[in-house]
Image (cartoon, rainbow, N blue to C red):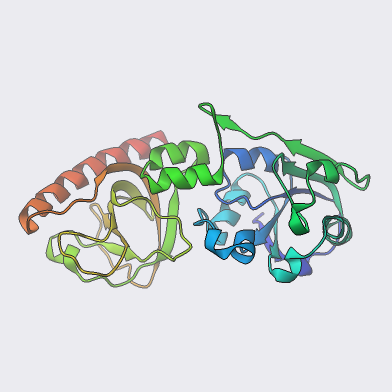
Length: 296
């Protein structure tokens, strides 16, 4: 049975076990909160895009990927609240009574220990626990290697290029999804044609460099950056060379799973040294991808 994705106003009340949170990344800590819940209640967009747009984070998971990840861990229903200025003014009591009790019919509510809600963040887990209409479970923050697992920590790892460590905390490879666009054909001229994605301004993007990755399941060498050797001025592109694959992906959706960073982005003195380095990158990426596929 596939997950249902619904807006809050489309939901009819019935007994539900509900986990509440933003859950960007659906990482190890989120999974502890969600465990045993049939319904996930989340916010779209991220609350900070409404409350403090300049402080809003780069997002780890677009909605389509978040829904798929939740489905994989057994969630049956994803309910979206449009976090607009009106909703931001809702009191904690109104949220509990009108959303959790009346609209959802919650019998059990699960949140992380740092969850806050209601105007001016006046509601917290202790406040939820005062209500007799449902049982409340408060899940402690999860640690890994002595650090709290959080979406902001994972964003920092990805920005630094440490996608392998991010993979450990997410429990899956960090993934970018987007439509393949036309580039400047530079890769094709060099013998390494690429499928190119232009990241959205709200997307979390790995630090500039070259990565081993799987693109639509195909072993790939991926460059993230601005291609300093040619100074195209086009801004950041994610360019994926699919190893031992031929075809046309223009206009299609590509899904890039980042496995490991190979090196940083650098400027080469012309095409020949760049081509030689790209050959080495492709060999290394192929080895890493083959090892990952064998593990799965």
